[in-house]
View 1 (cartoon, rainbow, N blue to C red):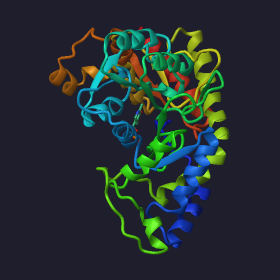
View 2 (tube, rainbow, N blue to C red):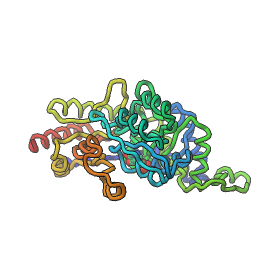
View 3 (cartoon, rainbow, N blue to C red):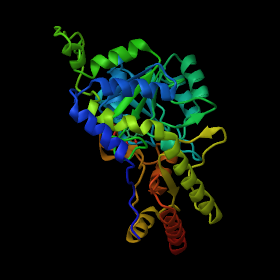
View 4 (tube, helix red, strand yellow):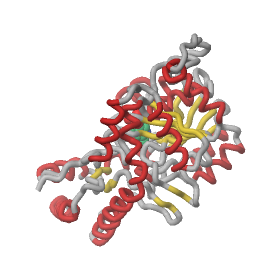
Length: 377
Ligand SMILES: Cc1ncc(COP(=O)(O)O)c(C=O)c1O
């Protein structure tokens, strides 16, 4: 049986919405994007959403809007996708990597506090709600307030998540989301930043269009000259993307329930045979974006190989960022700098998780993962 790593759930609703948009006037950022921004804000319970071309752009533009650049430091977990750290570097600031917790793989808040204590140049903490589980935002907010730094949440994995009743964007100064091809809500490529700070979101709307003071929708009723007062770049969400995203919003909870059920099945089965995986803590509703297992030390690649031979799609999320060649060669990072992130990076492998996964496919994946463990033990 062949089980793809991911299959999207876009269907008739999304096709109809797309066709309606193609029949209309606006292909670029227009009424659909505005509607998506309004509905996404409502879903999360935040004041503003700014639709962008990707989460990476959202991280970069937000740091830019806050004036973060050369001479500033930003704290980033070493266990994340490279985008989190790259957004800091592209903006000219310095990445201060931080190790992660060995049970959850989330940024270690004790280490964040140490970094804040000893580094006066830190301006922003950039936590990642990895795999869909939120970082303890209440504690992080307290820390950030004590040290007068901002929080930018990398919420690429976490639309549906909650922790202690808090959702992404509630306690952070801003949160960035991804609608990339394999994300829980997708339009192929896309992203957004949410915030309750009107000044920030007004700025982001300008930055996403090269710093132009008026967008196409502002100019179309009656032509108005636009000006450019700040340096921005191209990074806007457009109506074709928003048309695909809008019909998915009412289905978010139903899709989440299916993934939650699959995760519970994985967890119960793997617990019984001693296969390790990151733990979801009490009081947390994980968005359940990725399901990763931790293979025994030194066995991950053999595990990957075995599952692929069984025609199961797999991925690695992620190998520690500071050990990628660019980071090692440019900044001199080396093995054992962030040992927990490194260990997770050597053991982690992700298995299929999406609403269209059928029960018999879930059973097949479970059987083959257990078989791999038995063979490789
Ligand atoms: C944790 C994390 N941050 C940021 C990103 C970047 O998202 P995008 O591809 O929308 O730029 C991703 C994408 O996979 C991610 O997984």
